[in-house]
Image 1 (cartoon, rainbow, N blue to C red):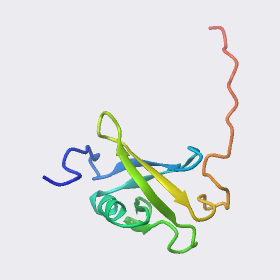
Image 2: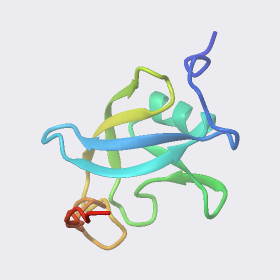
Image 3: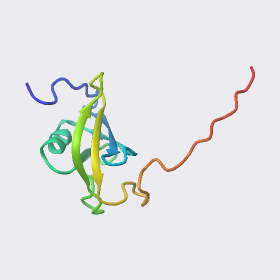
Length: 113
């Protein structure tokens, strides 16, 4: 039995992966992994994803130098989401921001029907 056998990948063979700063707990990004990118993440030092737009493996940081160094990998209670605690080696977002979650949505006031 392999490490990924009990995980629930979607119909495209992907599973969401939340990336969290191992030191601060801040959520840095959300990506998707297939079995190969998860295996590489579990067996190496860096986080790997599967790029849905390019339909290929994506070694986070290979182009920018902003790698994510894996500290631990967790699965949720339903086995359908991964949490990776990592040390970012620079800004995580392609915009240059520390995290991909830098845009606040404001709560709308309730409208009476």
